[in-house]
Image 1: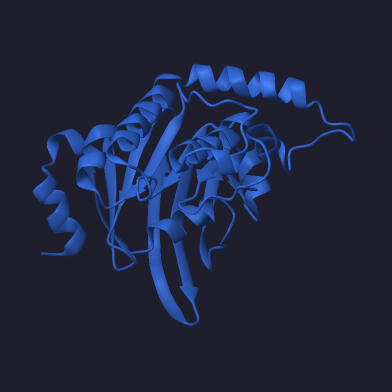
Image 2: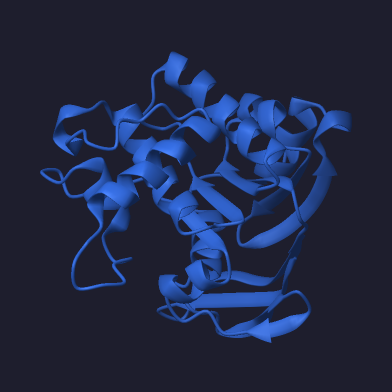
Length: 234
């Protein structure tokens, strides 16, 4: 589906990561693991068009593409749920989701709300399209971010440290939502350093340490201790 070949990035003459390659297959469930500062979020931000590589290429279905901004990523079926939500607090769920996706001068809010309600039920998100963002919980706000990507027909959903702001119950619910997406044929990429979450969702894990890819492991066949050792280098 997507291949990233020998991507390198430097900020202010400091190499953040070098010659990193990986593949995303249809209906994939991948974890991207590394310590804070390892470069994993930046790597996925390149795939989402927020940063641009100094070297390397990205291919979609075997064809090289240039992802210059998030709209390009959306057009290629790539969505990203950021750790820090990007929502307008006094807008409704529907208004936040359609923001930037308006196709006509007159907005069809009812039609959009109906589609959002159907997506919410399909993936077990249980969001009221008419709720105002400032009136719902942090966990529900994250689900709005997920719905923004589903509304744009994303086939690959990147989750950047998604459990950092959630309660234990919300974490369990999010893991189930990810499994629902995988059952529906979506590919999920989970950026995290939490080993139990990787075990709960991912089938394989790409491990980055100090800007370099140190290995790809089969999650079911690799212990948490082994993955931790690869992540920290000891």
